[in-house]
Length: 88
Image (cartoon, rainbow, N blue to C red):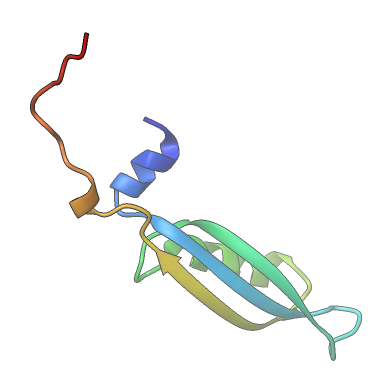
C-alpha cells in the first residue's frame, strides 16, 4: 500500500490553499502561492504548520489565505470483501 493510500485511509484529504502575500521589496503588490498537501479537517495541522513556518522564516507577510479540502476516498468507498472469483 502506498503512503498516499495509507494517509487517505487514516482520514486525510487533499487541502489546497491559495496564499496571497505582500512582496518584501514592493509591499503594495500581492503575489500568489499555491500550497497543496494531505491534511486533516477541520483542524488542518499540516497547513497550520506550513503557515507558522512561513511567518517565522519567510520575508513576504501574509495577506490572505483561501483553501478547499476534499476527502479523496471515504469509508463508504472502501470495504473489505470476503470471497474470490476465479476465471480460467
